[in-house]
Image (cartoon, rainbow, N blue to C red; front, side):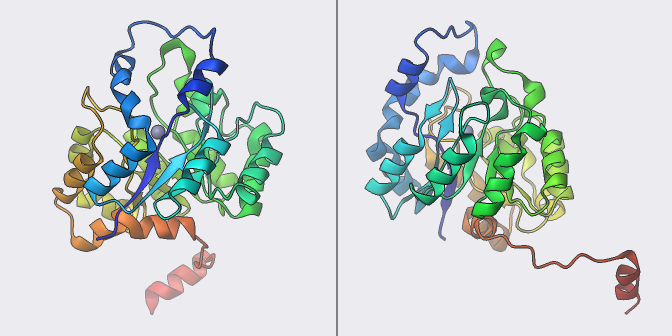
Length: 298
Ligand SMILES: [Zn+2]
């Protein structure tokens, strides 16, 4: 079965340190204590080796234009060029930065990136703020999907969770019902709110890059059926450690395979839903209530 990992970070460590030389990271944040273990995983060869071991044919690398986690569009483009059969890239622009709309256009049209990753709490913006809407309009014009980090993020006083509330993405979806949107990490502890937004909006998807124990607890066949047959997409958040364990892509593949899911559902999560997400064009006509009742009577 083909497997695509739709959520991977290759952080650009040196540039990140240059850009943040003076940044003070608050002490006592438990997840950051495991971060050293991720350093060897930032080599592209190790990434490809982990994909091979896990039976993953393709991964989607996210640029992140934010102070703490940083990877530039140029860097993601260069890695995709090294492994064109194995890697795809999503761009990132900071909505608070200069020329965000133009930079997005360039990342897609000149660098060949295929989507946009936004991280509202790390980039310090509210996704339903009208000031950001030109970015969504550009994404629609470019026919690219947008990934939003939602839920908690482990950076203490450096970020605000009010900007990561999944319900803010419902506002975006109401304003831009044609925009393809993916939420991350099964909601990152804001599971219920994230699932509400996915269930309600035909254009909103969600990825599985949560901790393994959460995947086992949350991702039931009943939930997937309720959200809709094509809404859940496989991702791992490589190279982030989970509960102190060094990231192994194969653990996530095994975890999904061991869930009580049908072959069809698993195939959807592993690659088909991603393909639908990338090519989404609503074929559903808007209905009026009269038509719905007529259809029921037939
Ligand atoms: Zn991530």
